[in-house]
Length: 361
Ligand code: KG4
Ligand code: ZN
Image (cartoon, rainbow, N blue to C red; front, side):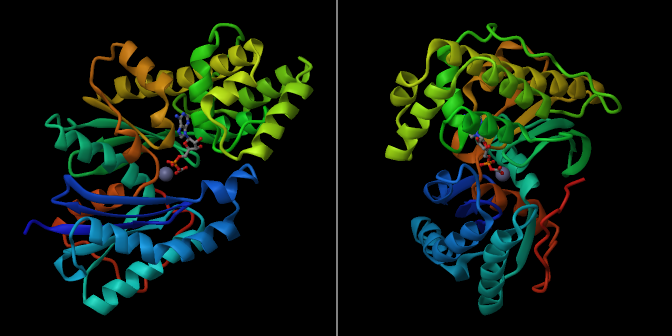
């Protein structure tokens, strides 16, 4: 049998487990989302996240094993996210992975969550027969990260730029919350933006002092706040909050019906500004390092506007986005990232600690 790795991911608000074979085939991928728990607070509540992970971890791992027809003794290793993330959340997955390894005499592989996002794209490209060519530029964009990494053959990483304030996904979530939409805001704004005019509101592109490849989103968020304050929007925002109270997950048409054209224009303009910020700096970084592939991964990589803009930009190298299920947090990416480490027999000791602020490079 080709080697199989069980991946476990609990760094934030998804309890996930997956079995991947040979670094390419995702035999199962189970994600238990806690959105319903955190949605009403407009963001992730760490204490609730740990509790939900504890509740979900055993059934989620069991489902991933059963769904792939894998027994623990068939595994070559167990891979788990050690950081970065919420420490109480990380501990649940890490402790469970350690105990399974201890009980079954399996090697433990520690994976950095950010590397997992990058490896999701690498794995999927390999599977589709168009492997990533190196050096590659990876743009990791999620609720917690907005980073540019140079990725060299054999998986050597170099940090080229990162956000100085909010992550791109966080900007989507905060703007959505400010306007009365539900958490997470990215998918809601993504669904509404095509109904608005992206040229309606002009946001200025921030010139960075120091590293020109660093990102900034807080100015954009403040600009949206100022716009909202000066456009008498209280009653429509309150109407959307009421809609959310009635139904924690309103359908796209319900949001659309509760959003006047002027606000749709604002959302489209905001989304375009985020996309411009991301793609402009990514393209500059890719050019600077002579990238042969652009990898975009993390929850914000699901954004349809971002995907379309990357295609329309006619970049001189292919842009690879993992399919949406592999872009947001999942455990298949953690198992995928473990295969090169399995080949190098890079195993973790069973006393390894969770590292909330772990960096990749
Ligand atoms: O990678 P992920 O699942 O978790 C983190 O590691 O943070 O990313 C979640 C983030 C949230 O901020 C969410 O709003 C954003 O990804 N997101 C999107 C879309 N889908 C998820 N942002 C923009 N457009 C989307 N379609
Ligand atoms: Zn993530």
